Image (cartoon, rainbow, N blue to C red):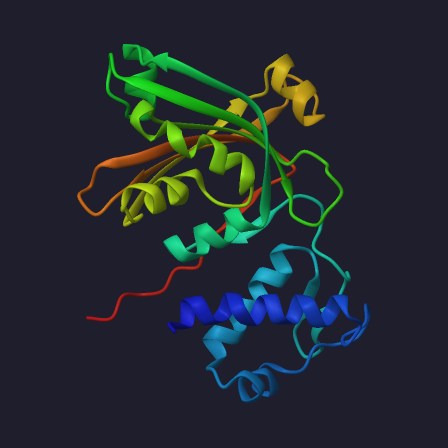
Length: 244
């Protein structure tokens, strides 16, 4: 496994240990060198893992002191490092889909241009409120998933398996695999309807994420559009210099 995937595993393991009380609030985590020995990785990987905990408000760092545990659980909202399709699927599995509406329609030019759909083609849209798996059912975000009408047989599966990506369900049913994801992130103002559904002030700022899931031939499997209130999502990116 690459160091990029490894640091997320280490971060998750440390989160579990902090939650279990192995590292109580107010205590210091093992030093970077000790964590390197414990997990069998280099210092850059350990530092990336600690960065994730720091972003989530669980630890703080001070020179010549160390890394102090500040909270037993991540701060409210959702923070996730995503640098691969595997990570993205794992994020989806941490969310539970509560379907609000399913509609069938013909894509007009405006919607098609915005989402990358085909004008005049028949689609279905699954609209859901997402909540974090295993948590109180406080709304996390609103997601609309669009796919061609010929894939509509997966709709019952979307209801039966609320933690799986609809793109992944389509892939299983139609022998497709998610080979690439195009993502566009932009600010958005919450409408009164979205504010009410997500229990957030309408007119407040939110984060709009459009993802196009593509198969091995580069064709779109599905398109998702997700809106998070600004206090419920943070996208964390860890970049390394490419090796030539």
